[in-house]
Amino acid sequence: MPVDIIVCVKQVMDPEIPPSAFQIDPETKRVRDAPGISPVVNGFDENAVEAALRIREQVGGTITVLSVGAAFAMDVMKKPLSMGADELVLAQDDAFADLDARATARVLASAIGKIGRFDLVLCGRQASDWDNAHVPLGLAELLDVACLTVAQGIEVVGDGVVVHSVTADGYDVIEADVPALVTVSNELGEPRYPTLRGIMAAGRKRPTTWSADDLGIEPEMLEPGLSIVDLYVPESGGQVEMVEGEDEADAGRNLALRLREAGLI
Amino acid sequence: MTVDTLVLGEVGDGGLDPITGELIAAARSLGGTVGAALLGRDLDEAARQTESYGSDAVLLAENPALDGSSMDAYVAAFEQVCRHAEPRTVLVGKTPLGQNAGPRVAFRLGAALAQDCIALGRDEASGAVVAERPVYGGSAVAKVAFTGGGPGFIVLRGRAYEPPAPDPSRTANVIRVDAAIEPSDIRVRRVESVSQEVEGVRLEDAAVVVAGGRGLGGPEPFDRLRELADLLGGAVGASRAACDAGWVDHSLQVGLTGKSVTPDLYVTVGISGASQHMAGCSGSRNIVAINRDADANIFRDASYGVAGDWQKVLPAFIEAVREFVS
Ligand SMILES: Cc1cc2nc3c(=O)[nH]c(=O)nc-3n(C[C@H](O)[C@H](O)[C@H](O)COP(=O)(O)OP(=O)(O)OC[C@H]3O[C@@H](n4cnc5c(N)ncnc54)[C@H](O)[C@@H]3O)c2cc1C
Ligand SMILES: Nc1ncnc2c1ncn2[C@@H]1O[C@H](COP(=O)(O)O)[C@@H](O)[C@H]1O
Image 1 (cartoon, rainbow over the protein chains, first blue to last red):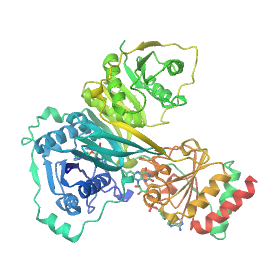
Image 2 (image 1 turned 135 degrees about the vertical axis):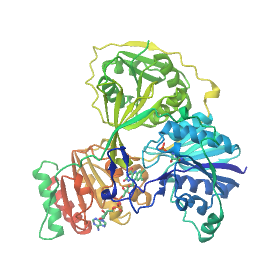
Image 3 (image 1 turned 120 degrees about the vertical axis):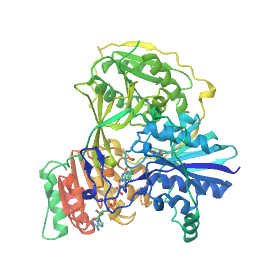
């Protein structure tokens, strides 16, 4: 059965930026954009795009990428298209800056309502900026569909979806009928690189852009449930004792000695 | 009966899960009355254990559908317990149950949720609950306040609070909540559980953990880490980079999206110390790092370090440890 898939993708600050480039604006209590460092598609969302592409290869169908935000870097947001997704929908409005998880899920649900038909919604398990890890669960509730979390594998079988869901020591095989929402984890495997053809095709595609008005979103729907009282960089552990020696092997022996003196081994 | 703070207790194969006591301790720190919800079958023993931790009420939802085969059953039951107890604040653990049932019930109630919190308190002026949570992979800590009205949901990181010492003489008001679970509530079913045999001590319980990262360059060096772990009676862990490379199983991953460990001794080899990794091991009593880059982030959190190539440092280290322990 061909399936229509919506993949929710968030644009985030690159989590690999050096600690020195990570800065907080004490006034607004927000993380400052790192100058000269491009944002990225949230890592787990790339895994979700990869999952969608694998499903489409198996059973056919369509892949629509959906993102909510106030401003987008178009070359970044087109990456899922260059990987092979069919369409990009941007729910973009100044009112969508710094939304909390509850408001984000509400906007996503409205946009999915406007997209209309779908069999699967795929999300990343967590966004690497606020690490909220619950927009998708809320979205599943708002859409009133089955919710399957932390997938390392997804297969569409008949009218249903079978997910290998990561557990502490392995995985559970869980299944549900579609429509369903699935969150995807890095255990699914590396997302593919865009091909040159994919990049060219993505370059020609125009995203569909919807404002808060287009989505019928009232200001109350965006009211935060949480307010940020403070945001700061935590202090690191403290003083390290560097153990040395005549050469590296000697340093290794001295480390063992030092740990024994400290009663640790 | 209504309570100010409701915690979602957890029952495992071996009885009450330790997270239950941690949640009760955190709830107690907020003041007011505390209720503990337990969802499952045959909960009498778990209820008695929960009473000994000192909660004012224990709310039991017993139903044959709460047999572990569908998360949806737990979500439905927890929603009913929440509606019954009408808490101002709800605490759940950063566990599969808490991370699923917490957000889903929060949305059903229109409530806001703060994920992965490590400390709770109250704003002195307004009395609002304030939670501290690492964000941006641990690069920053946010203090968030529940100001939107309605109940506030909090997911608490494991081992953030010490469980209270159990006292069997404590009693609580034990209430049975008639949790109806309809067939239409169950959309997701578990058909199979596949788990790796754990050799030796479990990573989560080990007093010594030896963890390897991308700097090891391949799967074979993990045999050396296993040798060291065996000498010290410990377990082997890994960074996500080492797991993603396929060198070791993902169940060994320590970090924000892996396991949280709090051993007495955490030895890292070829791990850079990214904040997302440290999120899973910063509660270790002593961190020891072997890394060839003297500026690596790991040395900011380590108590002992060697700046050098593990291929030279580690064999000599292991031999010396072998001498000491034999
Ligand atoms: C949302 C999110 C969640 C994440 N969750 C986790 C998580 O749960 N756990 C986790 O671990 N990561 C997690 N990460 C990834 C994390 O950001 C890092 O990318 C990862 O921890 C890096 O692993 P590493 O230290 O092994 O590799 P690297 O950062 O590449 O470090 C390798 C280190 O090895 C050293 N080295 C190289 N060769 C040698 C040698 N011969 N001798 C000695 N030292 C050597 C290098 O100097 C370097 O410091 C997450 C990332 C994101 C965005
Ligand atoms: N602004 C957004 N736009 C699109 N998808 C989002 C957005 N925020 C969160 N998501 C989805 O929800 C997942 C989990 O995010 P979070 O709950 O914020 O950690 C992400 O991996 C995305 O798939």
